[in-house]
Amino acid sequence: MALSRGLRCCQRIFSWIPVVIISAVVLWSYYAYVFELCFFTLHNTLEKAAYLLVFHVCFVMFCWTYWKAIFTPAATPSKKFHLSYTDKERYEMEERPDVQKQILLDIANKLPIFTRAQSGGRQTSLNSTRFCDHCQLIKPDRCHHCSVCETCVLKMDHHCPWVNNCVGFSNYKFFLLFLSYSMLYCVVIASTVFQYFLKFWVGELPNSHAKFHVLFLLFVAVMFFVSLMFLLGYHCWLVAKNRSTLEAFSAPVFHNGPDRNGFNVGLRKNLLQVFGEDKKLWFFPIFTSQGDGHYFPLRTLSECQNPLLASERRWREDGSDEDGTDGEVENDASVRLDIE
Ligand SMILES: [Zn+2]
Ligand SMILES: [Zn+2]
Image (tube, rainbow, N blue to C red; front, side, top):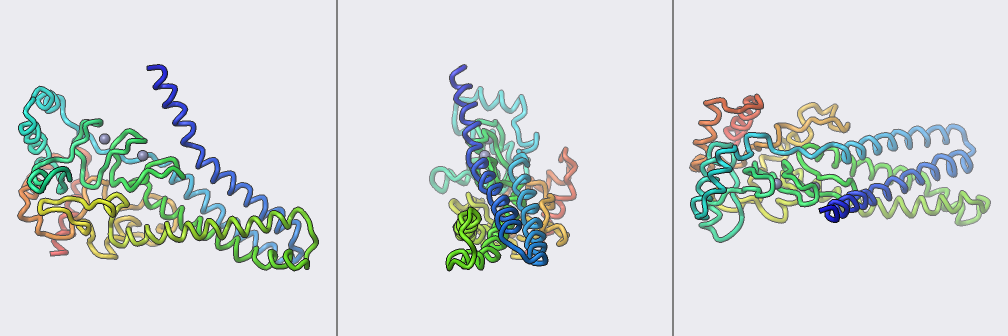
């Protein structure tokens, strides 16, 4: 027991290593750019001031978005998705797997859930509810259990070691902004450092320790830029298609089978879902994503044939939503009607 607790503690400490590496590289780049390049190498005051201003804007935005991506806790399912004490007892006492499955299905029918488990053949996938044994809850649509965080995470995208956090509903916007500002940071460094790199290279500037820093600044900025370009490009495509990384690898299963585009409601609405209605706030790491992470508008209204829709209607009518998110559900339903 003590050993496993010790191991978990070590694991938790080691999981911060990628964050420490990134922070160390960024701190060094700050020193190299501000002191070695701007203060020790540049002589033109106007140029120096312009470089420092642009650099600091990017640096502050990068730090702010990175901080928010790391320290925003992953959103977990609300209480009503957890098995109640009596349901749990009924489920655990039951030994027949088919009846257990039916118990879960009955509970899920009272919740606004449209996706099914993927295991087994077609017949099985039609009947099985996405249940997390570890957290003892019925998983809302797009929710997955993270084995690193040991919890179910709403609209889980992936567990990212570079932010040592789960990227999901609560911080996906912050993660995208973090990638964007990291790229901008690299672009600003590479584009301003390049001419001094050449001057050092051809011997126009004297050999000094600044030369070493400037050479490495360009090298590191280009290296990070190339890797970030692919990662950000991939996530832009995911946002446009309204898919999480997990859904891109394994399509969510609806009543009529797997559908990668199940949550794709058109480019504009997909964008608004992540960034919110207020365009001024799109570029700041302030939470503006739509909804509460439990329910997402669906692409087709073929869900009408889904017996689950009836239960959703019932759920809306009896107003059993304890979180007071009735408005959200109304919105979701109206989006479905728009698509129809
Ligand atoms: Zn779980
Ligand atoms: Zn995680």
